[in-house]
Image (cartoon, rainbow, N blue to C red; front, side, top):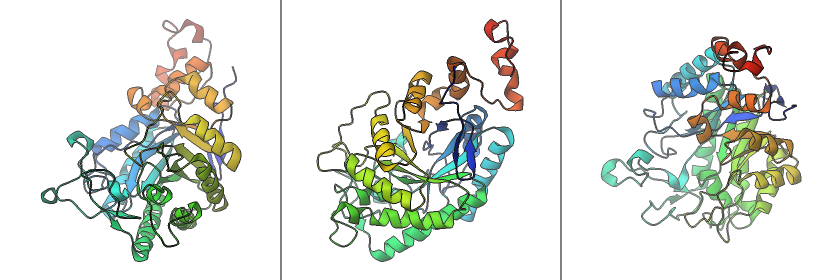
Length: 371
């Protein structure tokens, strides 16, 4: 068969061999933001497995922007050196392009890692001041964030730009700004978190002003031949929250600023959310953004089956598929998807012995096909 999922996709000077992306997944394995040996095996393993693009987890622009004290960062020379070691290794052994997601946790910062409950830190545990568009906590018992001043906004914008510049020096092929999941930029977008009365609050146009300023500054700092996208929470799944119509308008503005794709996710802005979880539940939202804003999209969320991913791309719901926990469960997901769909995909030289055509005793129908 001819597979759209395994067809190439080009953005600026980057051509991806297929439409499969390993989604950024927070690992909570960093030391003061710096990558460790864990990241070498984590990202290195995915880089072997024929997904066209492997994304490094949300990597924070500052210490106070971290979700927890174990989160990844690109705010220091030490962070940059450690991450470059990881990415150089991934590129030396694998076939995947490398991307990184850059973000700031906003009011969801200063917590323990998930393995310790993902709860707000107490003062005697090293809690730090959190920032947000308005002094509204994420939920009961959470830190009350400090409302950002314009000086704060300028500083955070500069931190995003510095992180993007570091990402280029590390050698990343693509950068994605994290503008979703209730972190800082999506807090500005959502009327549930942003109740400012200045030019950065109120109307939908005003609420997206700061995220657009950050994106524009980052795009200007990133090489013109490298793509840059953004992850968004397209709907809040709470009455009175962000709507898909808001997100379409946002995507149109982003496109004018040189955004190459929108990574369409949803929710995680408000604890009252009621997400209709089902396989591919974000795909219809991605389709609407793609069609109405005329911009490429990536979709994510309970995508686990090869034919499911093929249908999403082939039917125009998204241009790229992000696999997260499914890739953790099966790091060779893309190899197995290619076999199911009857197409060839790239193997690194050291992995070629695993190709089904090299094992005719196990795969008799593949004996005549070349690796």
